[in-house]
Amino acid sequence: MQNAPVENVGVGDASIIEALRRGDDQVFTEVVERLHPTLRRVARGYLRSEEAIGDVIQETWIGVLRGIDRFEGRSSLRTWVVSILVNVARSHAVREARMVPFAALGLPDDPRSGFGPECFEGPGGEYPGHWSTPRTPWSEDPVAATLAGETRELVARAVAELPESQRTVITLRDVEGWTGPEVAATLGISEGNQRVLLHRARARVRRALDQHLLPMERRAV
Amino acid sequence: MTDHQLPDDDLPCVLVVDLITDYLDDALSPHERARLEEHLAECDDCVTVLDQFRTTITVTGRLASDDVDRLDEPTRAQLIGVFQQWAAGRPG
Image 1 (cartoon, each protein chain N blue to C red):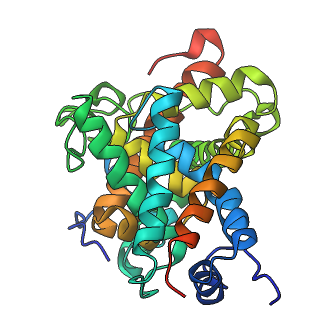
Image 2: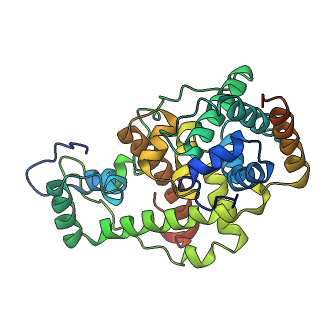
Image 3: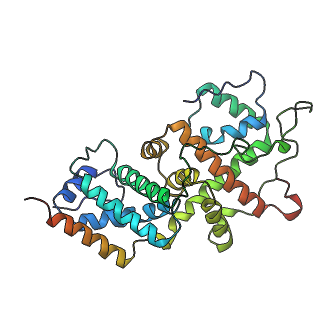
């Protein structure tokens, strides 16, 4: 048979699943190739060592194959595979005793959007809740500068330093380009919570960029 | 759709920044969206911050082209081995 296109896993899922069930290793290789970067990026949010990440990815595919006869295609293939990976990675992380509960949305005093109370006028001000100092646009275009190593490194580090739940969501949404409903389904959380985690994650990355890109004398936040 | 219980008078900037991801996801009600856009039409500072969030999203997306996460040859061989072993053990 003609191999189903796996450029966008989700479209040809039914025929891919059929091919996997038949033992078509070419289709398996294509699916693995396509999903591998996503799996690595998500796994790295839970585990640091390359060895552990490799183990988790192998265990994930074993889990996928064990479950493939029961997979009913209610979610996309990639959603299902990543949800298996998240479960495997979390149980590895629990064994390493470095797991925080996924439900933790951030510390209560962590300003949701990355702006502390000092950024806004207080209740006694002329315009309570409005900016206390003007916002400064970034002095260079970080999109143009992304390929320059420094900015890219900065963003990668900001993402790496996020709490696991925020990191997983921003990785799937903004790095991998998944939709909100798909990410919520994969992680078993509501779309609203998914957006809260995403917003906090973006806020932290924005802040890292802000500190990097603002002219020295304007770095207020 | 999230119900944000917005105040009746002009939205304060402190609330606007919390709504940015909901706005970009089109998860606000039409009323909330209109209120937010009214504010943005008047507030250059919030527009600056909104632009910075958009840029942040674009820049984060560039991490997808990181070559270190591509499938390497030893891992490919190992996973194909897992698959072939699994396939060989299946009935029929």
